[in-house]
Length: 73
Image 1 (spheres, rainbow, N blue to C red):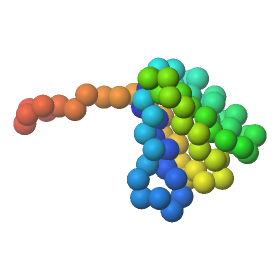
Image 2: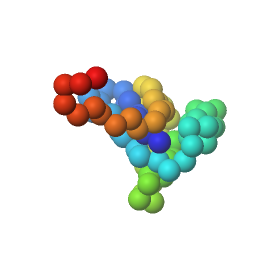
Image 3: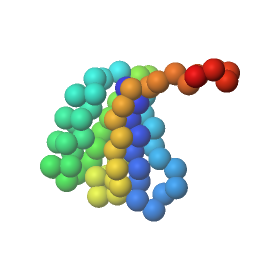
């Protein structure tokens, strides 16, 4: 699962490749916003990403889709 987190006043977004389902990640994000503390996500390699909820501009949760190769669509 590809999770992109936009941080306020920062040009680059934080990207996390998670093994969790879209529903599980969505629940973690919703709980973090309700608590008003920290958003903590684990990536596929076991590392943790911790972001203060107050600095988050957006969270995009979606599947990783392979990019097409060549000119055919």
